[in-house]
Image 1 (cartoon, rainbow, N blue to C red):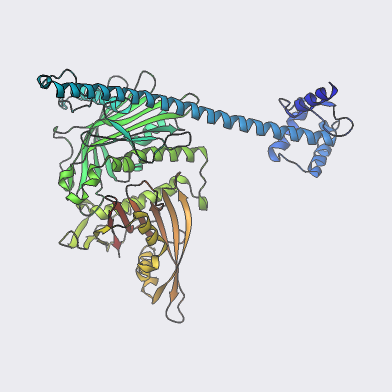
Image 2: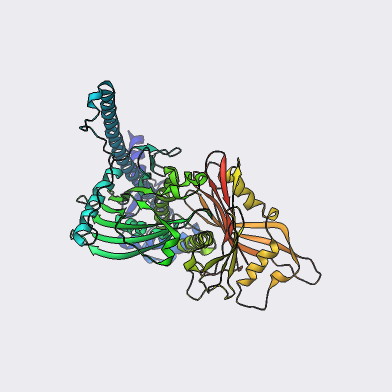
Length: 609
């Protein structure tokens, strides 16, 4: 009985609440309970905040400098700090377990909803199967329409010229979108390689047998619904293929929501196809359960949208009811449902490239999962879980990747309103030389960051390669630059970005030594995209000349052979060694797009000088 009492007393001492007392666990007086006054606890807490584990010397100093602790023995001070550290550890572990529990509860709720939706889908398919069997057995029932699929079809377009008509379209869009996000309006099938779980990316599905191409994703994000909606509505910030998005009209919906008429332009993925644009109605509203919804659909046939010369370079595509459903979770965070449903007018592209426009998986990879990954990345950066090199802020590094990608896409598409004009190249297999003589801004950098008035020259080409794994090709281009790079050209490009026009080291007799040093800057949560600085070591060919290293800012995607990406890229731009946040960037690089298991398309734009 005595042993049991002693054990209980020592256990109480190590877990004493509030730091007001504790048991001395050493020496003859190990059972002596020490009660501290509030003033003593305050003094100890101040020291603990600076140093949770003070040395014996520091504890002795504390007793000398703090008269209110004069009646406390050094050994008892040591025990207080031990108990205080123990309580801190317990609190942190408790907080971690609570966060894990909240995440598991939310994931369980999400999986239960998904299971319920799948059961409805199975029941619907069984019902339709029974109906089809009945029709086959009794031809007289062939014209019976009493049992029809719930797959949505486009409703007749209402009058979009007045607010009442727009509201009617908005409500229809909301109903159809919700039936896709949480219902059975589309026959969703799981996307290969995406398994749900507490540490998974989310639940991703693609459409089967519906009009156009569609993808659906849902997952947990540790951000509040309003913040998520704000991020997702800013499509150019996360959708790399989005060239621009402009809101032409905004109307109150009368129920606390807003209706917007939106014009969006997309980049072309290769030099062989025209770009796409959309004229849509976007409806934002709040549901009765507090969920936020942003749904969108095309206003095809309305004759709306800009009719400028720039729009003539685009093929008008259609967005079927799509959007975002964001539900708040108990304890913080949100459950996010994303649906993208498009008709990209595949008839307008060469037959060999139509898989890019007829594959729901491509939409899932480039658009749907990109949105979910982006908000998860923002959530981790906001929580402080992501720490990047060189003291750069995550938003700044993310902007560098976006600017590299935008400059690359600008050169591929070569829009007239950006100042591009073709100088040479007649066939689709030729190298196309384009020139931009405008005094253009460098990829949305600072207003005064202009390229030199002499302009930019771009060389670009596309080709088809057989039986080349995209990841292997991109890794080769990244790791064996000396096999294909022109060091003199890189040096000249780098010098052209400097403020001084007198120093052109690229014109000196130099050569690339073959050595490169890759310095990581940042990567996304799941390492699907990497941002890095590459230092190319130069060698002078003439005596008396100093060798000069060249630095490139580079981002790459799809290095992993198991990557699920829809395109694999290596994009880079010459930079100054100490490049500022608003450094001008002129992008060059490679894009590899898988068409099927045996064919890939490689696009190699642009090269500037």
